[in-house]
Length: 192
Image (cartoon, rainbow, N blue to C red; front, side, top):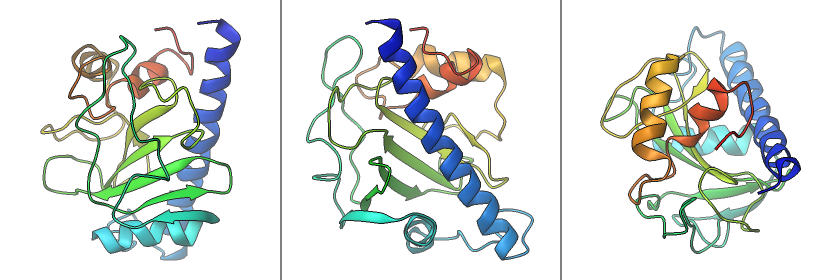
Protein backbone atom coordinates (compact mmCIF):
# COMPACT_ATOMS: atom_id res chain seq x y z
CA UNK A 1 0.00 0.00 0.00
CA UNK A 2 1.26 3.41 -0.92
CA UNK A 3 2.35 5.75 1.84
CA UNK A 4 -0.04 8.55 0.78
CA UNK A 5 -3.00 6.16 1.13
CA UNK A 6 -1.89 5.15 4.62
CA UNK A 7 -1.50 8.82 5.55
CA UNK A 8 -4.98 9.54 4.20
CA UNK A 9 -6.45 6.85 6.48
CA UNK A 10 -4.53 8.22 9.47
CA UNK A 11 -5.72 11.76 8.72
CA UNK A 12 -9.34 10.57 8.62
CA UNK A 13 -8.86 8.57 11.83
CA UNK A 14 -7.28 11.56 13.58
CA UNK A 15 -10.23 13.74 12.55
CA UNK A 16 -12.76 11.29 14.06
CA UNK A 17 -10.54 10.89 17.14
CA UNK A 18 -10.51 14.67 17.65
CA UNK A 19 -14.29 14.93 17.20
CA UNK A 20 -14.92 12.23 19.81
CA UNK A 21 -12.32 13.65 22.21
CA UNK A 22 -13.93 17.11 21.97
CA UNK A 23 -17.39 15.60 22.53
CA UNK A 24 -16.14 13.80 25.66
CA UNK A 25 -14.66 16.99 27.11
CA UNK A 26 -17.83 18.90 26.24
CA UNK A 27 -19.98 16.22 27.92
CA UNK A 28 -17.93 16.48 31.13
CA UNK A 29 -17.85 20.30 31.06
CA UNK A 30 -21.58 20.66 30.42
CA UNK A 31 -22.35 18.44 33.42
CA UNK A 32 -19.59 19.99 35.57
CA UNK A 33 -18.28 16.45 36.03
CA UNK A 34 -14.80 15.08 36.72
CA UNK A 35 -15.29 12.05 34.44
CA UNK A 36 -17.69 10.60 31.91
CA UNK A 37 -19.40 8.34 34.43
CA UNK A 38 -20.24 11.32 36.61
CA UNK A 39 -21.33 13.08 33.40
CA UNK A 40 -24.01 10.42 32.94
CA UNK A 41 -22.45 7.82 30.65
CA UNK A 42 -23.75 4.90 32.71
CA UNK A 43 -25.77 2.72 30.33
CA UNK A 44 -26.11 1.69 26.71
CA UNK A 45 -28.87 4.28 26.30
CA UNK A 46 -26.53 6.98 27.62
CA UNK A 47 -23.79 5.79 25.23
CA UNK A 48 -26.21 6.06 22.31
CA UNK A 49 -27.31 9.51 23.49
CA UNK A 50 -23.65 10.59 23.66
CA UNK A 51 -23.43 10.03 19.90
CA UNK A 52 -26.85 11.54 19.10
CA UNK A 53 -26.29 14.60 21.31
CA UNK A 54 -22.74 15.40 20.18
CA UNK A 55 -22.73 14.59 16.46
CA UNK A 56 -24.90 15.32 13.46
CA UNK A 57 -26.27 11.84 12.79
CA UNK A 58 -27.21 11.22 9.16
CA UNK A 59 -28.15 7.53 9.50
CA UNK A 60 -29.18 5.27 12.38
CA UNK A 61 -29.06 1.47 12.25
CA UNK A 62 -31.08 0.30 15.23
CA UNK A 63 -29.50 -2.72 16.94
CA UNK A 64 -27.47 -3.47 13.80
CA UNK A 65 -24.17 -2.74 12.10
CA UNK A 66 -25.49 -2.72 8.53
CA UNK A 67 -26.06 -0.68 6.48
CA UNK A 68 -24.16 1.88 8.61
CA UNK A 69 -21.11 -0.39 8.40
CA UNK A 70 -20.09 -2.70 5.56
CA UNK A 71 -21.52 -6.21 5.71
CA UNK A 72 -18.05 -7.77 5.99
CA UNK A 73 -14.49 -6.79 6.84
CA UNK A 74 -11.10 -8.36 6.32
CA UNK A 75 -7.91 -8.43 8.30
CA UNK A 76 -4.62 -7.13 6.91
CA UNK A 77 -3.81 -10.76 6.03
CA UNK A 78 -6.91 -10.96 3.83
CA UNK A 79 -8.86 -13.36 6.04
CA UNK A 80 -12.32 -12.50 7.32
CA UNK A 81 -12.81 -10.53 10.53
CA UNK A 82 -15.00 -12.01 13.23
CA UNK A 83 -15.97 -10.97 16.72
CA UNK A 84 -16.87 -7.38 15.91
CA UNK A 85 -20.64 -7.64 15.62
CA UNK A 86 -22.96 -6.83 18.50
CA UNK A 87 -26.63 -6.03 18.76
CA UNK A 88 -26.12 -2.36 19.40
CA UNK A 89 -27.27 0.68 17.47
CA UNK A 90 -24.84 2.13 14.93
CA UNK A 91 -24.66 5.62 13.49
CA UNK A 92 -23.23 7.40 10.47
CA UNK A 93 -22.22 10.95 11.35
CA UNK A 94 -21.98 13.96 9.03
CA UNK A 95 -18.25 13.42 8.39
CA UNK A 96 -19.12 10.05 6.83
CA UNK A 97 -17.68 7.96 9.67
CA UNK A 98 -19.68 5.09 11.15
CA UNK A 99 -19.67 4.68 14.94
CA UNK A 100 -21.13 1.90 17.07
CA UNK A 101 -20.95 2.76 20.78
CA UNK A 102 -20.96 -0.11 23.25
CA UNK A 103 -21.31 0.55 26.97
CA UNK A 104 -19.14 -1.93 28.86
CA UNK A 105 -17.84 -0.08 31.90
CA UNK A 106 -16.98 -2.37 34.80
CA UNK A 107 -17.57 -5.59 32.90
CA UNK A 108 -14.62 -6.64 30.78
CA UNK A 109 -12.96 -3.32 29.94
CA UNK A 110 -11.73 -0.25 31.77
CA UNK A 111 -13.30 1.98 29.13
CA UNK A 112 -16.72 3.55 29.50
CA UNK A 113 -17.49 2.88 25.85
CA UNK A 114 -15.98 0.78 23.15
CA UNK A 115 -16.36 2.59 19.86
CA UNK A 116 -16.29 0.52 16.70
CA UNK A 117 -15.36 3.10 14.08
CA UNK A 118 -15.19 2.90 10.31
CA UNK A 119 -13.56 6.18 9.32
CA UNK A 120 -15.29 6.28 5.92
CA UNK A 121 -18.51 4.41 6.64
CA UNK A 122 -19.38 1.34 4.60
CA UNK A 123 -17.09 2.38 1.71
CA UNK A 124 -13.94 0.30 1.13
CA UNK A 125 -11.38 -0.91 1.77
CA UNK A 126 -13.18 -2.39 4.83
CA UNK A 127 -9.97 -3.68 6.39
CA UNK A 128 -9.14 -3.72 10.10
CA UNK A 129 -6.35 -1.25 10.78
CA UNK A 130 -6.97 0.69 7.57
CA UNK A 131 -10.49 2.05 7.98
CA UNK A 132 -11.96 -0.05 10.83
CA UNK A 133 -10.88 0.36 14.45
CA UNK A 134 -12.26 -0.55 17.88
CA UNK A 135 -11.29 2.19 20.33
CA UNK A 136 -11.96 2.67 24.03
CA UNK A 137 -13.35 5.90 25.44
CA UNK A 138 -12.16 5.90 29.05
CA UNK A 139 -13.75 7.58 32.11
CA UNK A 140 -11.19 10.42 31.97
CA UNK A 141 -12.32 11.27 28.42
CA UNK A 142 -9.24 9.81 26.74
CA UNK A 143 -9.40 7.55 23.70
CA UNK A 144 -6.99 4.63 23.68
CA UNK A 145 -6.60 0.98 22.77
CA UNK A 146 -8.77 -1.74 24.33
CA UNK A 147 -8.56 -5.50 24.71
CA UNK A 148 -11.43 -7.79 25.61
CA UNK A 149 -11.15 -9.26 29.09
CA UNK A 150 -8.46 -6.88 30.32
CA UNK A 151 -9.15 -3.76 32.33
CA UNK A 152 -6.78 -0.92 31.44
CA UNK A 153 -6.64 2.74 32.43
CA UNK A 154 -5.90 5.44 29.88
CA UNK A 155 -3.39 6.36 28.80
CA UNK A 156 -2.02 2.89 28.14
CA UNK A 157 1.72 2.39 28.14
CA UNK A 158 3.68 1.83 24.95
CA UNK A 159 4.27 -1.75 26.09
CA UNK A 160 0.56 -2.39 26.68
CA UNK A 161 -0.33 -1.03 23.24
CA UNK A 162 2.44 -3.04 21.55
CA UNK A 163 1.24 -6.20 23.30
CA UNK A 164 -2.35 -5.68 22.17
CA UNK A 165 -1.14 -4.95 18.64
CA UNK A 166 0.81 -8.21 18.56
CA UNK A 167 -2.10 -10.24 19.95
CA UNK A 168 -5.01 -8.61 18.13
CA UNK A 169 -4.38 -6.39 15.11
CA UNK A 170 -4.24 -9.23 12.59
CA UNK A 171 -6.07 -11.94 14.57
CA UNK A 172 -9.31 -13.48 13.27
CA UNK A 173 -11.35 -12.91 16.44
CA UNK A 174 -9.80 -9.52 17.14
CA UNK A 175 -13.05 -7.54 17.02
CA UNK A 176 -10.97 -4.86 15.25
CA UNK A 177 -8.78 -4.22 18.30
CA UNK A 178 -5.03 -3.72 18.39
CA UNK A 179 -4.20 -1.47 15.45
CA UNK A 180 -5.18 1.90 16.94
CA UNK A 181 -2.63 1.67 19.75
CA UNK A 182 0.15 0.99 17.25
CA UNK A 183 -0.78 4.18 15.39
CA UNK A 184 -0.68 6.13 18.67
CA UNK A 185 2.71 4.62 19.57
CA UNK A 186 4.10 5.49 16.15
CA UNK A 187 3.15 9.18 16.39
CA UNK A 188 0.03 8.98 14.22
CA UNK A 189 1.66 6.97 11.47
CA UNK A 190 0.45 3.70 9.95
CA UNK A 191 3.69 1.71 9.88
CA UNK A 192 2.22 -1.75 9.47
